[in-house]
Image 1 (cartoon, rainbow, N blue to C red):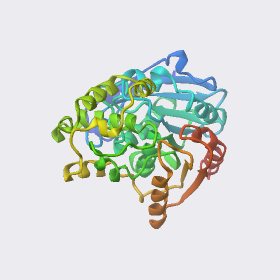
Image 2: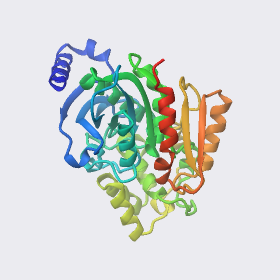
Image 3: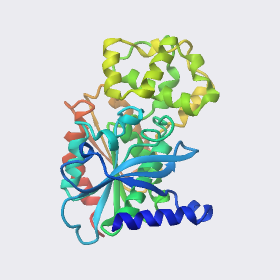
Image 4: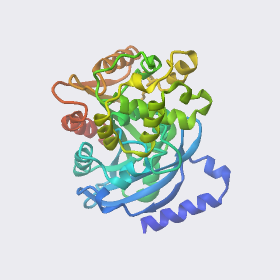
Length: 371
């Protein structure tokens, strides 16, 4: 009955006209069963949704995603919600977790959140499973996707969900978490946002990306070419006025097109068999004001957070170097942000998520407790 009622409400909202729709930052567009492989074992009721949200920082669009409830009856006041922002999986439609399921890195965390009694709302991000190419590392768009799926979850399951919620994510999802943490209260004022956990999140990329060009030395960080290709694919799709293809080598264009239609695991395997450096992607450097301005739009916020923020990073992370997070922490502390930091030692980029879960669950229990 909840599902039918929510669908009717969504249709009525669509029929009432633009004035009412504009007052609501998202609309539930459709819902369907998730593929069995995409449902965690700890999930009770679950649904795949399509909802309206931001396509980029400045354009509206659609996203898909998954909503999972724990097994059993909800507690008094309903299940608190964890909005989970996934890490890099690729930008092709078949990479969407609501289609392919969560990978071995992130599924255990989803299972732990559900087992601990939290509903999970997990966006795919606009452009992954919906029209266009994902605006990779467009933090404001990802923030909207991540907040709006919580609102969408309340459209469907509002009678068993608490208004209290947090946001968390790994890597690309950690980047989205910073932005969502800043926008959550403003974008969803009717809900009770309580805090965020950003794990192995890239920051300060606006200082690194403009240095890209044919002369950039090969970097020891693994996966950097993959990240660069996904970023270039988003720029090529959403910002044609910058003419990114004029700066790319034939190999760079070929690999960028491959990145648009291939999931990250397969792309990574291809790159292992065809060794490529970042410099190989470019025919001309990006060091000009046009690109410096463009990449400044990716700058992770260092202030404006109105609830506690937990940051996790490992010294052994070879995908996102920890000095970027040290710089982020220093700037946030200068702005008086309520932030706690867990520094891991031996875990790599992917292992950071599982290793941090005990402390992240404790953080959630603390900030989500009824007041």
